[in-house]
Image (tube, rainbow over all chains, first blue to last red; front, side, top):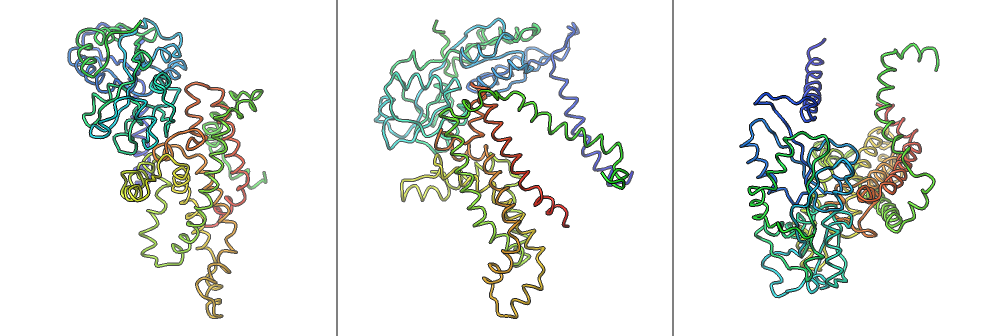
Length: 260
Length: 267
């Protein structure tokens, strides 16, 4: 083969080889090995509101459990529910709503509620300081505000809270997940946005206005294993539900008292 | 197939072609298999579906029209103008072809958002900002669609015999005459092809529209966005809307079959 053709072939084959061998790394091993330094990967699908806290907890878990790699994927819980019910290779699913966990289907086992989060009206900390209620700021025709789409947990909770608070104005956009809502608020493209309390805690430049009825504005987080998952995954769940996990989630602004 | 064609196509080539077709055809056929054909009309006439369909069609047509109005003169300038300038400008003008759509949307937001480089002055003067409006959807469609017009039409302009234009100049034609009465009439086919490709591209646009214009039914939620939202809660609806987009794509490619063939066969 001529030299340029060989170079092109190598450039094309190398990434393909990497992609095809990496894929097998994340599959659940079918044989349990008891060698002490066995490499094991735990695939976690989690709601994007847990990005900061779960990343931190995964690192500390990996530090104390040699050979275990936690692979985190963050996104809208409803999307993950779809993927899991269609056979996606997750071992753990942490959803931002009970509905999303239910929608994930019968593959989910050992499901439990472990914390909750409130949706709030977030705004830049220096603006609208005199406004005290959600209805006041959102109903104001001069205010541009956005929320998540009705189909995702953040949006579903927002809808309930808006209705209970008597907000009649409509948002300028129904974004596909809370990350894009937050991005637009931080970019200054909107005056206010309905995001989670934990998002406001994570960003010092934002402050929040609470909805009047906390029960309607709350969404309950659930965590579960995908059936057939090995003990290492259950260990990570136990870690998240234990004192280390609780400390991190609590600091992030999650409410550890789970409403029944 | 004529005898010589059969002799030129080896079994290995056929095998590759079959594999290629499978990679492209099977997912689309699979999707069409899942479409709820019996309840299709019902799915396509839900309030949100209708809004998405109408919005997508309106904004993509306007975007394609603007792509032609702005793109054809640009293509003429690239073909006949200062070639060093054209060489520098061409990658930028055609970059949306390769730019990831979300990056395109972000670029538009940075320029025309409320806090944007130009958008801020606009907002302070008029109280109006482009994001979250239907105009933003059109602008996003124009941004991603115009490169198709420029690419196709410039290629056609370059293939025009230069001696006709030279003869016209000696007969007293000015630049405007050459453009409108000599070049354009001969490249009608390319303009239609470019416009159609721009329209199809604008219709399918998702990432740029979402980032720049947002997603509100009836205002900014286009058909691809409605499919994305429906994926979460109403899968049959997602399949039905996807079927519409597939049908439009196939129709566009069928209508353009001879034009595309002529673009590929020359040069």
